[in-house]
Image (tube, rainbow, N blue to C red):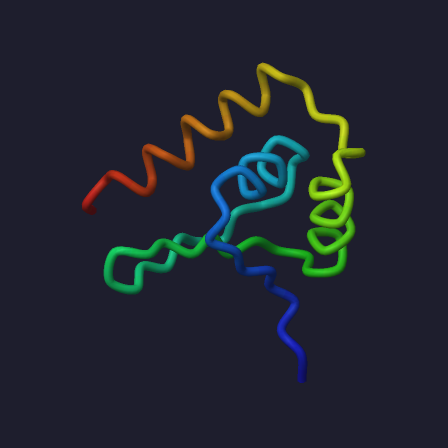
Length: 78
């Protein structure tokens, strides 16, 4: 069975997904790398395609806030 989770280490893409309202499930750490795990793989793959094609519209303030939240999660050691 294919997982419905979408996993990426790309902070920029993760910020875009988060700002579009995709639920972040967790942050997995593997050594110095952090992987962001999101729900709804098919939606994330669609948004990822738009993100890299530079056709994804996101609110600038939402995106900035999402990056701040994700960075806080990465740099917190809890």
